[in-house]
Length: 271
Image (cartoon, rainbow, N blue to C red; front, side, top):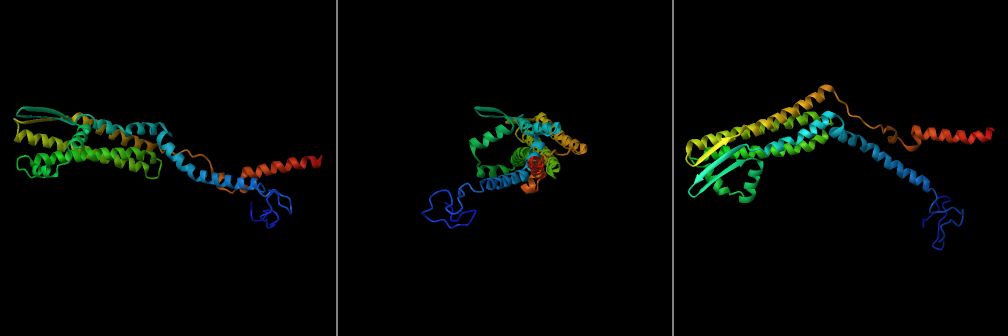
């Protein structure tokens, strides 16, 4: 029960247990409920109107235009290309021989199964015989992992493509992906060349350029799609919610409803 009647401001007592005000008889609980509900709806519509442009940009970034759909489809292909073998390593030790395809999955599996032995790595990097080769191999792996990270981040940032700097960001991430892919492939080629030179009877390796070419083609396609998008000057299609930004009583639709209701009430009087 309210402390005072919302209509006549009568101070309600503990003994006034009925829902009606003992002075004016109005229902204290439901008095002005339509106005309160309208204000709550007005506030909800205002929040919706503020958020709707962001949702429109998000939706348009993903499926608002055929080029957006193509860009979205291309977004994950760099990661798929990293599943292709970057190269093949073969080594022969006493009572042991192994052949390994080097790609993103094999690299992650190696570190997850064996961990990171910093002492062994320091010894390998400092080795006069194998140091240069393992430095190149480490650079190749780090560049591959960085490319994977930037590819994933760039894919999720496609949702912001309709933002003011969205296209520049998409192109920048694609360029960075190409740089990391090039560094990884070149470092791997140098590692293979070095190991083939110093321990040819134990180790043999082959760099496979197909994965690198696939990655570069995908990134070139992503850049091309963003450039075409920019050249066409494609604009985001926004839902018109400007009316919801106004107070309820000031909205054109509300004013028209009030005029229509007033004309209906005036008609019987004129008759």
